[in-house]
Length: 83
Image (cartoon, rainbow, N blue to C red; front, side, top):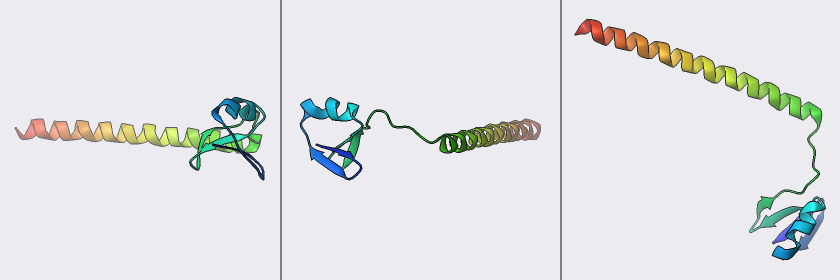
């Protein structure tokens, strides 16, 4: 298990994990992040870009669900008429 922050990499034990994490180190095990360091922030501009993208994607999902439901109704009407 390693604790990494910037260009610093320390090999640590399970007992040291919380200490390093509270100091802002990311904890890796077998090359995968198992815990992120505390105190990290995201620049506000990046946050707002993600918020805008999230809203846009929600709108796309809602419109595609509406299209799918209207297609189902049309298909159901055609099936009923043809019987």
